[in-house]
Length: 79
Image (cartoon, rainbow, N blue to C red; front, side, top):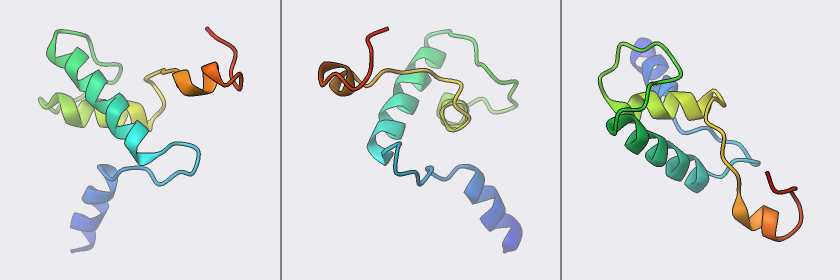
């Protein structure tokens, strides 16, 4: 049972105040779509599922994104 919990923790949504769960899901979904359309993964993976790969990439901070609401509010400089 402990091993199953450890494996599930690897795919869990990060619980971070700075990164909302909603934002994590949206970014991972967009990255999964890119992978489905032929983009190369940032990580070597044995998984054939783009959703699993994209979730791991987002969790590790390999997928860069900009929150447009923060840019409009002047909190972040535009890139």
